[in-house]
Amino acid sequence: MAAPGPPSPPARVLEGIGRASLRSVSALGDGALLLLDALTWLALGRGRGQAVRASSVFSEMMQIGVRALPIVSLLAATVGVMLSIQGIYQLRRFGAEDQVVIGVAFGMTREFAPLITGILVAGRSGSALAARLATMTISQEVDALRVMGINPVRFLVVPSLLAMALVLPALVIWADLVSLLAAGLYVGSELGMTLQAFLLQTLDLLAPADVMHGVWKSLFFAVLVALIGIVDGAAVTGGAEGVGRVTTNSVVHGITAIVLLDMLFVFATTR
Amino acid sequence: MHPTPRDSEPATPVIEVEDLVAHYGEREILHGVSFSVLRGEIMVVMGGSGSGKSTLLRRLLGLERPTSGSIRLLGREITEMTELELYELSRRIGVAFQGGALFSSMSVGENVMLPLRERTRLDSETMRIMMRLKLEVVNLAGFEDLMPSELSGGMIKRAAFARAIVMDPAILFCDEPSAGLDPVVSSALDELILRLRDALGTTIVVVTHELESAFRIADRITVLDRGEILFVGTVAEVRESQDPRVQDLLNRRFEEEQIDPDAYLARLTGEGARRA
Figure (tube, rainbow over the protein chains, first blue to last red):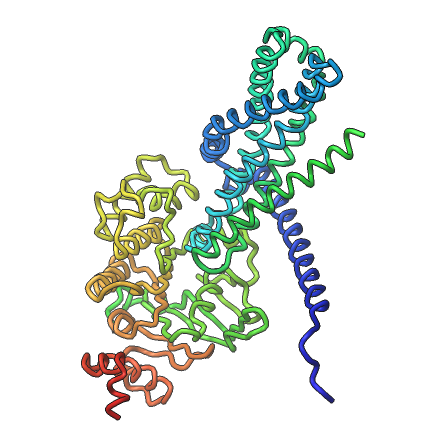
């Protein structure tokens, strides 16, 4: 009987899709188990003599949140002004420029503030988390924790996850404020409206549920970004090249997951 | 054999490995390994690359589960322990990893204090005193505020030793302590291992492929080759062994030692081949 020949190109493509699908499902499973483990340590760590240290959480919050404030502010203000420019340009055709407030207020709070903040945090902190985990895995620091009897999930994962979940929604609220302020200044100069009038109109339009829509979304983004950074980082193989690869992967996976989840969230809550 | 502080006491095994089988993926790496380590002795597990010594070490540390067989540390079977039971046992075990595995974001002092901070309820002043004492033992007193990136290779290994012994472990595992170090620094680390055993009575397991270092520090040597134990005995017994595979191992070392620099240069430039 003749030996089977090499697979045909379509078979190779199918095999590639199959392998990628299996990897994705496996990564999803890893992420879910990690989340469960992290929540268990958060709840039971003290009873097991390994409480999650508040100082580690604060330190992560500083890194993920406070140090990201300048860039979040810059991006939020830019998107706020950009949205105003586009809105005024389009609405001018109908003579309805002053209605730009509606687009900016809803657009920023429900969509753009959480999305750009989530993407920024994925690029900035999710990747840093992946790189840190990968470097620690390669240099046996994770093994060192385990043989010292220090659970790596409690010591490394929970502080990052908790900090991310606390800080990202706060950053989104900050982005809401900055973007609306920047938009108000631009709209004021363009349409002769006072900043006070813009903000009052915004407050009048927005319900707390609109702001919370973005905030809730960002909480899911935070958990996703942290889990993806950790799962990707821990999956490192090889040396420095491997660290670079998982860091890049974490950014791509993080941003893709945020955009997809955003669509699902909007689909489920807004129609 | 080096004198141990507990020579007068009956030697009790603190590590007992029986019929250990371990796989890496589908491949069987350890094929039924059995040996024991006695209290207060320095056991060197020696073997070339691919011999399975790293696989064995990871199983001994509880980092990975074996396929079958038994590992008893301090009288307790670890292959069936839960994660939390292993954490509890780890209070009595220290590990000095090959590259040190110091946390790069922490100073040397913070690294050494980490097990105390995370596993004990000592106050910070006591922890600092203990940290300084251990740094003193490894000749790194005064270096506690430096970051690992500011240390040389030998200093990193010594700091890793300080962290490994900070909880006064009953068993200390050292993974390739001499790897990547020049002979002088390597010899100083060997002295440190002997001193730790003599001063603290710690049982020490050293995993290495360096024959010279093994002969210098070992009370007994376990020779591992292709996933099997070739020989267990004292340094003298290993040297006198008639087992051809043990002799091969020793001869490879002597061949390396006897390389003539000119011959090596000729080999590199290909002159030897041309002459032939």
